Length: 329
Image (cartoon, rainbow, N blue to C red; front, side):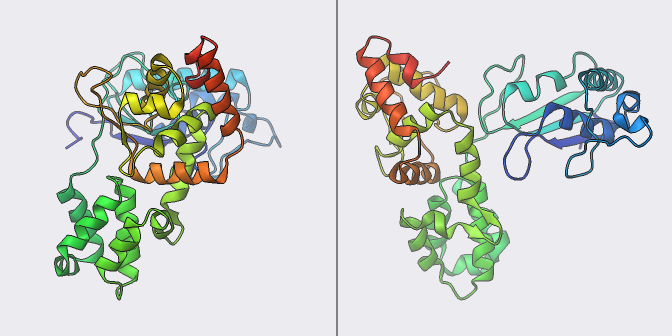
């Protein structure tokens, strides 16, 4: 399907490491250069000097060690994009600065950027918000992992499992991997475990794949005030849904501060909002179920800094500058 519009192929690069930390721009550029055979920038690498030590990533990608080398490589990447017609996939981007210099200035290359947050400062782009999979899609994924026959033994329990995963494909996948190994476990019993808020995240582990660890990576991306706000909002309702009025009460602040706090979490991808235009008071916002459970865990554990952020937010609101404390920036 991609051969005609992109005859020069596809380039795929992850902008985060496996542990969720961001890769440096130099490291990403070096990998792009390796995949695309860009040789122009390599004359600046320390490798050209006899006996010199070359910085490298865990994957062995040479990284330019100086600003000059990085500038040469960045320009070579732009020239490559101008001469070719390829699809470039920049996967799991942490922020705008990570990719702004990687987007083509000219030419016919197309770039697909995936991110957890909205990247509101990135323009001009065409944004596509991927909805959570429908029940049927989630059941299809689960059936591929545990077998369609087993799925048919208890379709009601299977539906409970995918709904307990809160629309997170990784959670459905982990559920399927776990059930594929625990062949003796009835689907209804596993559904009961996932329905228990105190046990759900403990159950969503398969080998070295953990939903809690993946959510924790996104949690670390949030500023401390945003974490405190999310912890307060996560405690509003079992289903994670809330209105602006309820958020205002939970945060102990004025309406303007609450709006900015909620919108900051929307930017970060931690809160979903209505797809169409509605007034602020009519909008029903939502924190995804598993993120809700994780945020409650952090609040219960008394994560360092969150109490101070909350106290600062309430004090700032009473002092006439409500938006500053609750919505940074």
